[in-house]
Image (tube, rainbow, N blue to C red; front, side, top):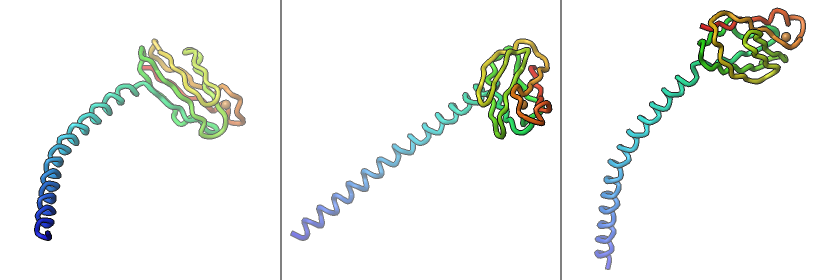
Length: 135
Ligand SMILES: [Cu+2]
């Protein structure tokens, strides 16, 4: 009785080990495929975010003096109020955001456009001016 039990255990152990060995080679190939997929998807994201800018407004300035976008391409512009309550206006491009928000527009003419705060926000309000460079 004992001998046959040991033989049964030994045989099942061999089966389990053999099964594991077979699985290993299969999972290795799967890992290789998935890394290739993630690489190709990340490169397409970079091209999509080309013409997006985010302006951070605080009391009393925008985070950059100049923002640059490409002419003839759709621009996604978002405004984030880090401190205080501000807006932006760009007269020649019909852009206006009051508070947090985003607009999509396509600047056709290369040039420099003035970005100003369009909400009376306090003492430094008139200093809140930056430049949008369309190239
Ligand atoms: Cu203001």
